[in-house]
Length: 80
Image (tube, rainbow, N blue to C red; front, side, top):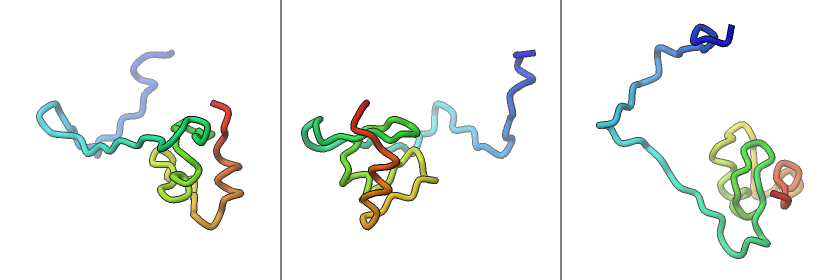
């Protein structure tokens, strides 16, 4: 138990390899640190406004919207 046989392999995942660039994007919290919040699920730091505007890029299942400030406060924290 605990060996390599315990891992699930998805054969349909494309091998990016070292010769192909990855499609990546950087997200930075804007403004002073006192305005930052962390996603409760992945701990990414963004401002409340960024979460409401962009959502959490690491957690697409969390549906942040500009109209749902209470939901955004519930799914993020200012204690990180």
